[in-house]
Length: 269
Length: 331
Ligand SMILES: Nc1ncnc2c1ncn2[C@@H]1O[C@H](COP(=O)(O)OP(=O)(O)OP(=O)(O)O)[C@@H](O)[C@H]1O
Ligand SMILES: [Mg+2]
Image (tube, rainbow over all chains, first blue to last red; front, side, top):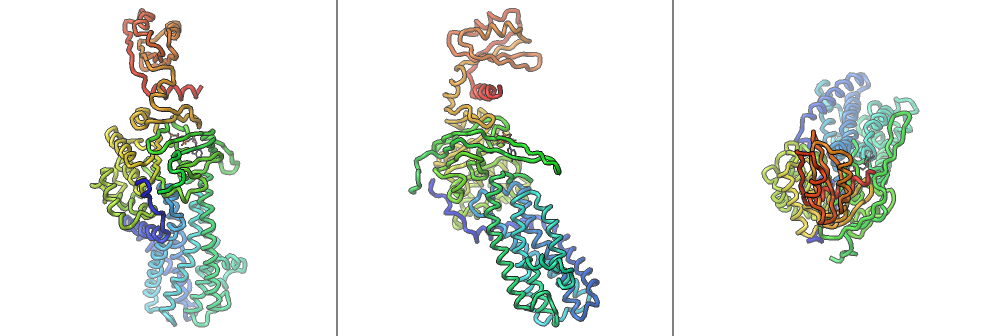
């Protein structure tokens, strides 16, 4: 009996469990769906007005701009926020104490946030199409969806790194609000980077979604001139930066988990 | 089956110290250092309940967290099941269970059963066994009826039971319980203690902290007293009882005593300690008596002129011993 302890953890199973937990918590309290549905509607309306007259493909610009804005919140912010909640609930301690590295749990939550971010994107699409009265002219609708998902995944990689801050300190929300603003302006979420002042581009270069979003614009807007050298260089840039973020997340998480044991602030909230 | 040092002690610590540094203020940050543990040496054998007693702030939670890999010692060495808590967390975590008492630490918006499922997954409880094991556990902690209700609807006692169920879900070899009955009514506390005792039958080593003496007395054949970050005693209940002065306790009550009366009592043969307490208009003197030769009659004779005098003898409880120990440390 005493040796009948669990064999240990499975990372994939823990990720699935975290994804499932997010879903259960969402279903238990779905009222936040309303604010998270209102935001994409507003973004959609604003973007439509903003990009009106921005050339023949302004609808696509509007959808991408507003889509990124709403996904930003869902995917990036949501990942860290769930960890902040773990602090608040006092569940961070038992979770860290369990054999599974916390990173796997964050991955599960990020997956959930990708799903809910997609919902925001769909709402934006519907709103913009409804105002315009016609769908945007997309050269390759399927490719558009696939690349859209790809953008989300690159954003999710950033979310994983942000989540580490939430394990690190209870002040992560504060840090993220500042960091988020810089990224937000610098990465061309709303506007293509080429329209932004030069100083923003170094920030953008190290931010995976910039590349992915640029690739998406290349693929869906004929004649688009982005900040890189074309579609494939963009894809390469996105893959490289995303990989770098994931590697960074792996390294950071290991250290952060150690650091919090040293400081002893796991139960602070 | 062939664990290294499988018959060694369950817990072994050498000079474990822990310092917390916290900061106050925003611009001009003031550093404060709290030495929560000041060199704890402790050995706990396998297969029984070991109790760690101590008043608020003694360092019980800090020590429990160090042993359960949630906190690193600032210095010193702690081994659990023969493995170093600061370096061998991967080996240790699947084999240990931790229950930190209280209202927090659960996902409140989902059901008790879902909480258990989640942690079963994180602990790698074999999927084929998961549901059945959870069912058995819920039965064991008497939560079958509430299993599918949201945890936020649970009473404190029910939450505590769920905490316990989570702690043993993965069948740990060693279980750490930090004040497992805190905030429970007497009936729930008794049920919880019964459950804890039943775990020992499964071969689990249990390390339990409490500041209820009777709880330690009831559950723990061996215990240690922690006071201000130091172990001030470590013994069996009977051993502890004989440690402080003797086996007999006299209680003397009246509307106040004069100093020379107290002094006279102190000089009685075998009296090792006199503690004075006030409650309402009454004063109670508690005498610790080492010999059999001193009796209540002698006490009465020394205190004439107290028509309201009440004198009685009772068994020295662990609580008396404990208060003495902690009290001595204060001075
Ligand atoms: N994270 C922390 N930061 C700063 N000081 C801390 C921290 N955790 C504990 N302490 C301090 O360490 C000391 C021991 O605290 P601990 O919680 O271990 O005591 P305890 O014996 O569990 O008390 P209680 O019976 O009240 O639960 C206290 O002085 C406490 O203020
Ligand atoms: Mg405590």
